[in-house]
Length: 220
Image (cartoon, rainbow, N blue to C red; front, side, top):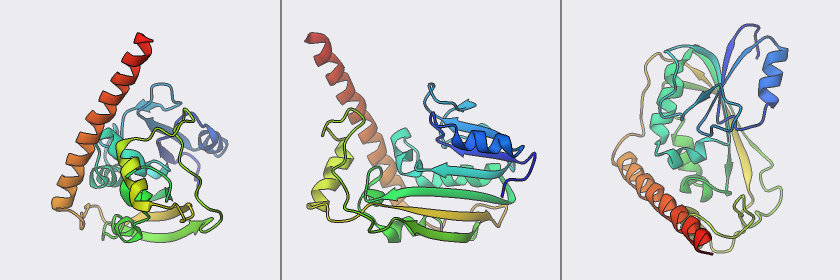
C-alpha cells in the first residue's frame, strides 16, 4: 500500500504519530491536517478547505474524524468533495469511524443506511467495507474528556432517543478508490442545508456553554 515517495495525507491526526512514523520508515511523504494547533499536523485547518492542490495525494487516511466534521461546521459532502479533489485518480481513501458512540447523530444512532449513502457515488470504487468488533461488548456511557457526564446538546438528544444503551459500539472501516475525476454528490439536497443549519446552531450553543462555564469558574 505504501510506495516509496508517495504522498499521504492524514485527516485529523491529533497528537498521535504512529502513521507518521510508519510512513517515514517506508519512505512515504506524510502530511497531517488537524484544527488543533497543539497537534503534530503539518497544516492547521479543517477538511472543509484542504490547503493542497488538485490530485496531490496518493493516499488520504481518516481515522475517527468524519463523525466530528460537523463541529467545524462542515457537511459530509463538503469534506468528501475536498478529499476527492486532492486525491489523484486511482488514489486510495482509507476511512474508519465509530458507530453507536459519539459525534454526528447518524453515527450515534447507528443509522447504517445514511452512513452507507455517504460513499455510494460513481466517484468512488468501494474496494473494502468491514466492521471491527461489532457486538464485542456493551456500549459504556459516553464521557467527555473531563470525565464528567456533561454532554453536548446533540449527544444528549441522541442519548434520549437511544434510551437504554443496549447497542454495542463498533468500528466501520472502508477503503475507497477514486474512480472518476469528477465528484458526484448523489445525496445532495435539502438535508444538507438542514444539517448545516443544525451544525451552526450547535456550534453557537457550544461556544455559549463554554463561555458560561468559563465565567462561572472565574466567579468562584
